[in-house]
Each structure stands twice: as C-alpha cells, then as structure tokens.
Length: 199
Image (cartoon, rainbow, N blue to C red; front, top):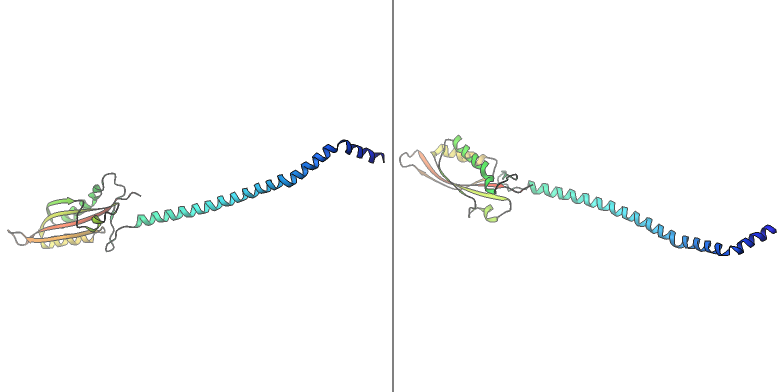
C-alpha cells in the first residue's frame, strides 16, 4: 500500500507534468501527424506531376522533331523533281543559284550549244513561285540567246529537262540564222528554283 500511496503522491505532485504530457500527445496525434501525412501526400502528388510533365515534354519534343523533319522534307515537287536545296548558303538567296548556273552552262557546252547572251532576272513577274512569295523559295529566270543546230538545241533542252532539279522552260522562240538556215538562234526563258530555308 505504501507503494501505491507513494505512486499517487508522485502523480499529485507532478500532475501538471502529466497533464502537459497528455496534452502534447493529443496535440501531436491530432494535428502534427495529419499535417505530416498531408505533406507526404503532397510530395507524392508532386512526383506524379513531375513524371507526367516529363512524359508530356517527351511527347512534345518528339512531335516537334517530327514536324521539323516533315517541314525539311517538304519541297516544291514537279514531275518527280526536287527543288535545289541550299540551306547552308552564307550569302544572299541569289547566290544559291550558282550551282544551277554552272549546270546549265555545262549542259550547253556538252551539247554543242553556244550561249550568245544571258541575263538574270531574280524576280520574274510571270512565275508562280515568284508571285507566291513563299519564304525560303527563290526563282531566277535566265533570258538566254542560244546558237546551235536543231539537234544541238533539242539535246540541250532534253538534258535540262532530264535534270533532277525543277526547271521551267517558260518561253522558247526559234529562228533560223540568216546566213545558214541549218543554224538556229533560240531565245529562251528558263526558270530555276532554289530553297534556302536554314535547318
């Protein structure tokens, strides 16, 4: 009994501490633990949202890459031909025609056609691409006077039209040379096209 009395006396003397400890336990279990659980739930939700964001970002990047590839592969196509692509040109779009000029001159030389004169028109008013003003697409019309036999000029036209790049014989006027009727003088308007959109 003495032990029970002493235990009760200790509790009476320290009742303030016991009540304070019970209040702290009640506060801890009723307020702090739910707040901790709420915090853990918020962390889980945040991680889920981060994962969803990464998935959506990957899908967006994949779609963006696919769209860029499609845009790069889109070219004005005519009869299975492609537009000469010169995206790395560091100069004006007019400079992108240099390889095509060289090609035309080489074809003329290979087919025995002599070029008497040549003029360059970088914005022909009667060309569809030039009138459409499509960004990155350029047109140059070569106004040429060619001299050669019928077969030489015919072979030159065939060679130009067989090339893989889009060209357009906009106008051809043939007249025989006055001194030798076997020689033709051809006034030709040949449209060339390039694409200079940077990748």
